[in-house]
Image (cartoon, rainbow, N blue to C red; front, side, top):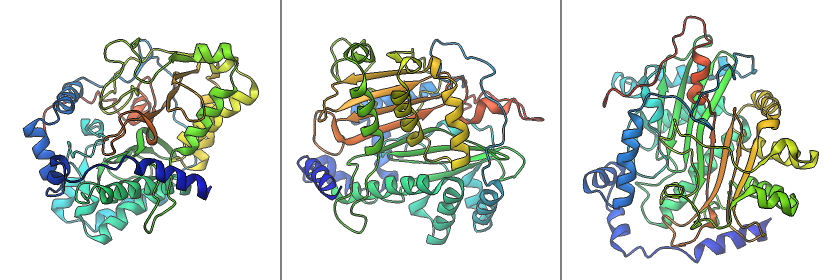
Length: 428
């Protein structure tokens, strides 16, 4: 394992950027707010600014949810006991709130049905500066925010989240821009009032880690979430050896390599990662191949590839292992319930692949049904200089289609609750 980690570290270090270029020289002089303001007002780079403007238009749409055909399937989700420690989570949240000033309370709290649930984004640009930013509060308040996260997630999920944050801090060190990318350059937002019996939730979002967490009694929804890393390993310093997303990578490749040539051909919807056969819009600079990122709450994502229900029991077990990795943030009891739900849909669960599938190849894959979508994508460099996708820059996503994101599908089932549409009404 140590040799593998060293090799991975050496690979990305071939692509370290020239920090004397204007881009990095400017970043080194700005804080997160100055950096975001310069981007929004200056419009550079143009392709990313155009994407940002497109996101703002998408945000104005009433929430519907991701579908495979444009039509939301009803009655897919139910209220249930998932055994999460809601009293512990509420206690941690109330402890945090007790430490905040009136101004901080006003900044961090939103209505449970606020459309601001949907304004998370993955780039390092602070495009929606709501809530409390962890690197701008006292250490005690920051510790309390992390305590809410720790109480909510599984121990292994909490470790994964911290690892993503630490890798982001490591990236900030690599490019000498720690005020923009650091271990705590994340925003925390509370929706509703912490309660053991009424719905509420929170969001933690920033570069390469975005978690939307809805809670109701003993039930939890962590969807959508985004976890990424560039590079995906820390190979020096106090957190050396920290690595994420390599298990999802290895399991996906093992599944694809286990298929017969006929099934591999059917699963491989495009042979190259930026394939000339892709229709306009199937690839873009920011999302590259993944479809369900920030502001894509209403996207239609057709089924592609092969049916998981037609695979062997050993191959289906690989699918389960992949899904377990994507559900790692959930407490173990909720994860077990969710896995059983997903397995009941194997007759309508599709696996698709883009790119090669030799050991050294970069690739994309997606597993999709009516109740879950997970995506895995190797990316080209954003801070690093690799022009082609590489295994040290990874994006992963989970969505709950058919209105399940942000716990929306559950809200109309809660007695006394009114299902909202998350309609944009302008800036707060």
